[in-house]
Structure formats: C-alpha cells, structure tokens
Length: 435
Image (cartoon, rainbow, N blue to C red; front, side, top):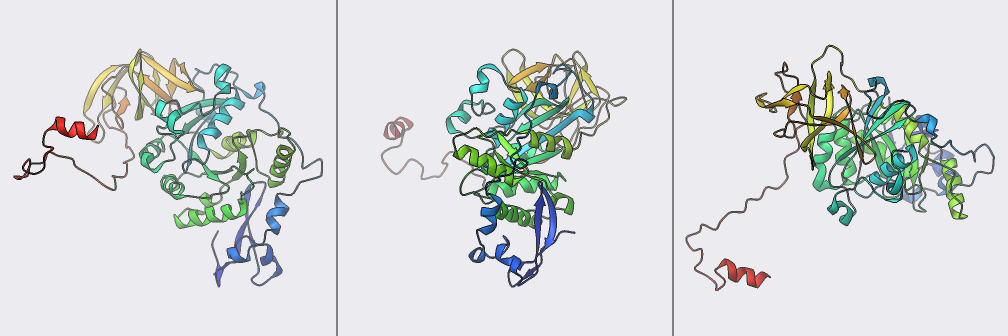
C-alpha cells in the first residue's frame, strides 16, 4: 500500500523508479540519504541527484538507440477492415493547456506512418479548425488512429483550456485509458487537476508523460513528487498511483523510460547532432498498459453513444462515437433514441461508416464493439443520443457535464424609466458611438 508518512514536514516513504516503473523505498529520517532526497523542503533540496541523473552516460550500453518504427510493425490488413477487439486500444491525451498534447499526437502519427506527403511537414495537424490555427490552442476534441504492431490505436486529442473542459468530459466515455501529459518544468497545473479528476472518477489508469524534459529548467523528480501528491489528494487507488512514467520531448520526437538515455539525447542535441530516439517506448506502453475495449460483438444488438457531431460537405451531419455492442454495416437500419427518455427521434439507414487515420477519413464496410467511428444517415441525431438497432429500446447512459460556474442572462431593459435618461437612445445612435 502506498502512503505518505511525514515527520516535521519530511516525507519518509518516497517513490523511486526503475525503467519508468514506480517502486517504494524508505528514507530513514535524519540519515545521510536525506541530503539527496527530492522530498525534503525546497530550501534543503540539493541539486546533486538531478545533476547525476542527467549526467552524460559514457558506456556504450547506456547510449543505445531505441528501435525506429518499421513498416513491418504496421498493419497487415487494410485500414478500413474491422479487427478483433484484442487488437484495439482506445486512449485519450489529456493535459493542461500548452503542455504539448497536440505536438505529441503529431509525433506519433508521423512516426507510425499515418501521415504522408505535405502533412508530414505541417505542425499540429490535429488543430484543423481556423480559430485553432490562429490561436495555437486546441478547442475541439478530435479522434484519429494509427496502426502499430498489427494493433489499431485510436487516439483522442483533447483541449487543455479550462473553457473547453466539457470536451474532455464527453470523450472519457470513448477511451479505456488516458495519457496524462505534464510539462517537466511547470509540473501539474489547474487543468491537470481537472482532467485527472475526471479520468480517475471513471476508473481509468493513466500513463504519465513528462514532456519538454530536454529543457534546462526541467525537474523530473520534483514533478513526479507533485504528481503523486495530486493523485493521492484526488483519492486515486493504489493501482492508479502505480502509473508508468515516460520522459519525452515531443518537439524533438523522442521519449524514454530511462533518464540516462534522456541525458544522452540532450547531450547529442547540445552538440548539434540528431538524437537517435523515437516514440516507440510510448507506443509499446500503450499496447502493454491500456486494456482492450470491452463489449460483445456476436449475438448482441448494435448500439453506440454519440459523443460528437461532424459536418461533411457531401453527407451532412455525421455522428461520432464508440460502438458499445454489436456490429453495424453500411445499409443497416438504425434508430436514434433520445437521451434518458429513450423516445425515438428518427429512423434511417447507415449510408456511410468512417474511421479516421491521421487526418484522413477511411471508409469502412462494418464496425464492431470498441471501434470509434462516424456514422451518416440520421440527420436529426444529437450529442448524447443513442444510435442503435431497431430492437433496442433503452438509451445508453451518458456522462453529464458539469454545469457552468456563472450563468448570465441578457434581456431587454423593461424598466419604467427606460429611455428617459441620456441622449443616445436609439440603436443607430448607439451603433455610431460604438463603431
């Protein structure tokens, strides 16, 4: 059982890591080890351990280069094929604003071969909205996928700004785990706490990525301590606090479980050389730690909870969501059920099924439980509605979004004194003054 023991403000039980995995070791109070511990007060923290962990490694074994993603590790089947649930991983990327989520997704897509041509030269390809490109932030959650070692990894990129927290809440019903990205210099911030609270409440077991680890101001051990305190403060279980941690530089395109390997990458960059690293450790961690989706395909009626709506210039409104049960094919009859009540809003047929890979839409002939797909053919569908077979009468449960903190109503001035004061009384006069 993991716990915090404090004596005079000092933590006695502290986590240590071996190849990114958390182990617990005990630091004796008053011993010489405290001089190098990261869990002492900041005034007493020594920089010895940080310099040692980031020191250049001179042995050939520690300077090993991690393997690149090769074509043989991609898919043997067509991207639009339905594959077994055991080979599907659904994961969301969550973080505070500007901690590197979209850049990390970019890196994964490029190194896995999901992007090609001109898109390989673009940055933040997932921020396709005009306002997103202008502001440099993610506003809408977006779903994409890539193939790695014959597995399909569905990735949901989420916004980090607090104003768009509802986007994060909705997508948690689509994924089986999350990758929590934290700036290795700033540490956990306000939105980190918000998104982590929602993920832990859903029972998800996060993977933690300390991004921007190559910055001189990075402090991995201290941030690890702050994260552990945040997990425990939010009531995380022992399994959830035993998170795997990886150290990454999404901008440079590499990550590792080992700080000594990170040190070699940083030294190579300082000498003007390209670091011989990639995102393979993160992809492997997703395959190993993220569970496959649950849901019965054979013998179960089709049902899907609508999480987002998309606009297609040729097909109109498309509903994006995760298939909860059953199998759906193009041409199948479906119905749209209202959330909570289960009233039939609309009946129709599936005209198209889409899977996103990179920034492209791949047509599918059929999809099954665990797939994240977009369906067209029911233009009256809405968010949180259930799309299901005609024999399904009960809507799927959806995640309610937190109500707004402040509610403001703007109405016409109906006071009996309205219009009796001032000289700017008409709309044209007000417009001329304002503009």
